[in-house]
Image 1: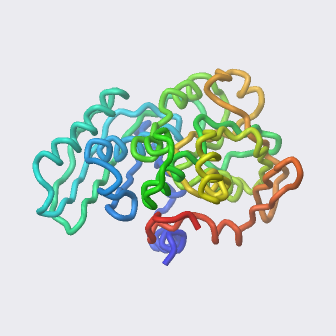
Image 2 (image 1 turned 135 degrees about the horizontal axis):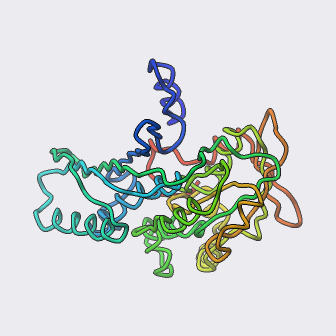
Amino acid sequence: MRELDILNIIGNTLDDSSYLGDDCAYLNDLGLYVTHDTLVEDIHFSLYTTDFYNLGRKAVSVNLSDLAAALSQPLYITVSLSVPKKINYASINELYRGINDVCNEHNVKVIGGDVTGSEKVMISVCAIGKKISDFNISRSYARKDYSIIIAGESGSSSAGLYALMNFLYCNESLKNAHINPKAFVKEALQAAKNINTDVAAMDTSDGLMDALYKIAVASKHSIHLDFSKIPINPEVIKFSEHNNLDYKDFVFWGGEDYSLVIILPDEALASLNSNSFITIGRVLNKDNNPAVFVDYGSHTEKITADVFEKKSFNHFYTQEKIN
């Protein structure tokens, strides 16, 4: 069972699937963006590698990251929690303390939710944000010669997860990247206030290559990526070399860094703070079979549908190892 197959069934079954396709749905009549994500124990997190405080923070942050990818202003969240009987009151208190702290950091309010019993811990958050820009945002808006920019690193979270799951030593920055990720809300708001044309945008929740390839497919344009420009924590490389791993797997396929990727024309790029975003590539010609071309300097690798399907994250399996 693949996530894409289920999404296709949903889209083909609903009478109106026009709101589907991006990580946030835009309600034009209300001027609001809505997104919803669920974290499931032993699929998205393990209670052996995280604590309830950081689980609360992460559950909110991953949704705020979706709103950031829509370049919107986060406003409200609802939280639905399912827990087994063995979970004590102190753990629930820590969970909501984490939720409260990250909400306060972004001036977001908790306005409701639900609590049920279950066999494993599941936390499901719906987040609502306000459109503050005069332009449109969708993964389908990449165009020829647009620049690809990113706020945030790639590979840190998945390297940290690999270390935690396999009881390996790594720098604390990698573990923290996985346990307590950052939503790039500030950078998204800066972009929303300074750009004046339609752009493509996604976060890297399922990996940098996931975001770039999905944008390429949605916009029907191929992409050129300069590997040397990608922001990578040197600790990712150090950890990979020490454990005989290929750090590019973490950078491209690991996911959960929640970095913000925007694809936009150069005149819009000039209006942004260069300290917040780094240019990592450019959009190529319109293509009936869009791909991502990764330029390593000495050679170029082409990421096609077959490669993407083999390497990309499947939500119906655990993240215990990078394949």
